[in-house]
Image 1 (tube, one colour):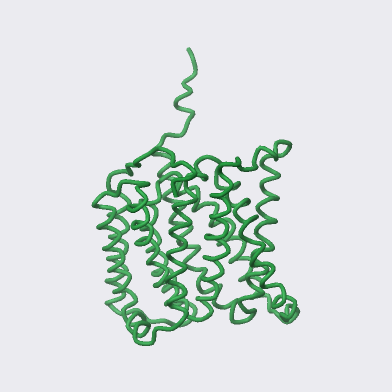
Image 2 (cartoon, one colour):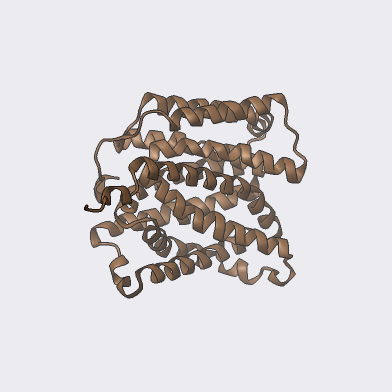
Length: 321
């Protein structure tokens, strides 16, 4: 009897199931990361943090790329027609987005940062609709809006004070959220063709050098010898776990589930950031915050478990963005 090769291959539903688990895990990691980054930035500063991050991540990316491709490393290089998209992703997703997010968090609080950055899915849906990359279903849009309302309720007190005392940090983070949405949409076609690892490595190749050059003087002046083990632990978490592994997994999740279906999951981050702040900073939770968290999760579930995505075209061309 011939072997059942079909059974040996993972089903689409099985892959989507694991991608959802991976996406939720990354949201937990990124939610916790707000506290880690805020703590590290207070002890180290924005410039040295960005220098260490963008010196380390490309090295990790190409080291892993060399291990995966071994003697076929040249095959990982992007095709000429895809290079403009890689460059755009590097400059938008790494140079601009990460640089602005780090600066914004240093000017704001972990809670406010988490709240403002949850506007990213709304930008994502707007970009998808304008670009015609994916046909958005009513439940996806409704679930995203419900989740947004829930997160506003969850952080109502912080939100009101943030509006009344709106600072540069909130505005910087709002713009950074739109850039992350743009990066997510632009990166999806090349992620489907090349895979998450080559996309991360080569977008860092183009996006990291500007920030490394700009932040080198501040790194050289930083008191690295005086940093505590807790700061170094925070750096490892932020760079290796949250950033390097997080971006790899998030790219794969978007390729499997679709950008529109993945975007609402970002609303899980602020409740997690709130829980971490409660554990570490003594933040209290009112009944209003519990209600907001419940509404947020309901909105995410509504968007996630509605009928599947319907792409307008299977693979977007490099010049489509």
